Figure 1 (cartoon, helix red, strand yellow):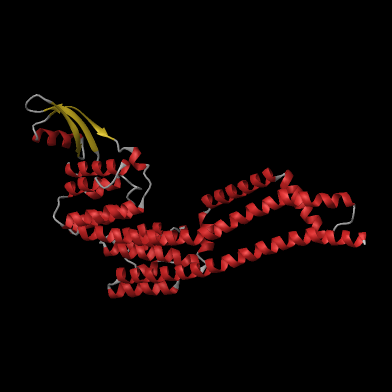
Figure 2 (spheres, one colour):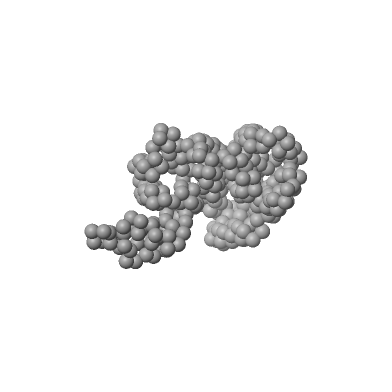
Length: 388
């Protein structure tokens, strides 16, 4: 429901102001009159955009969900529970939760209020809350949401940790090689320039690379940025090219399937309708090709077809799991189990790859250093032979 700001007078003639959540201005006037408030002005209140700029902080979101679940389970009214939780936060989060509490107290539902603060509260979150409000199990669903968010945050942390060390090694390697070719090699090759001797092929290559690094380092940076920007634009314009390729690799396929099945099973368990759950879980997968397949399947499912026969482009194992879940009536449980299996498969593969990356990077660095040493020492040996 939209929110309206009013300014008016009460029965004692005192000036009052506030906000009301209602469908229309007529509804606002009717509510105010029932409270013996005579409005002077009533105008729609836009959603504060500053709140929409808050990034989704999964740690805070999990804490918010867990604490709200505990308070509601203890019998605390929703608006009072929200006010109490706001004291645990600061800054924009504190102001946002206080505003949510005010709107709930004025009659707005929690799910409708949270939708106005997307992406702080993702769409799947507000959909779960809406289903919980209809079924009357809001504390249980909030606890499920907190657990789901914590698991998702743990996976993202492991992915970040696995990528951090290889990226650090690559960056250090680039800086070291740039320093060697820009400052070290030029000082050494001055000796060879004065000798007028014929230089080995490896040494000539080193000298060429050194000259390029010295004179055109800025051009290399510009080309690297241009290539990166071009690839980014291609990915934005045709995301299915890259996503289709990634979906062929078992490592990335496990990640995408883990996200899709986990969110799908979680939403079904929380009471979200199948079509809505399929739509939201396809978005959360992070793969546009998988999302496209699910979007095409939604139309067939809405016409009465089964999910397993409607989704194309997925693995036979996942299709069979969905089919079994539909026939047995345990689709949500099977999807959650499948998500855990895919997640473990992805983490094992990531651990193996990161274990292999370290020696590979060391070998590449050793090979490069060996070429540099060989290219520098070989002409020195030739000069010694000429002297003798």
